[in-house]
Image (cartoon, rainbow, N blue to C red):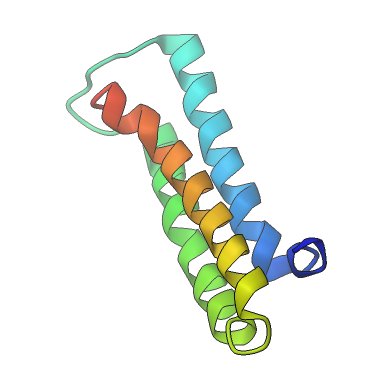
Length: 95
């Protein structure tokens, strides 16, 4: 799996998920759970990071699933877990 993770289409979505988590946790640390009528800049950046991963994940799946299915499924599962971890605080705090 480590050789599969060396490809940018494998680690870029992970990096984007971790950036989304860091952004969200930083925002919560600075401002707390605040209800706003309009979404702020942090929410828009978080959304861009989460949606921006999809083309990388699709490219990775299309390229590596036929060549190395076992390793590709493990990387896709890791990407899914990272994405869910980035979404968890949003659902937990109902942001």
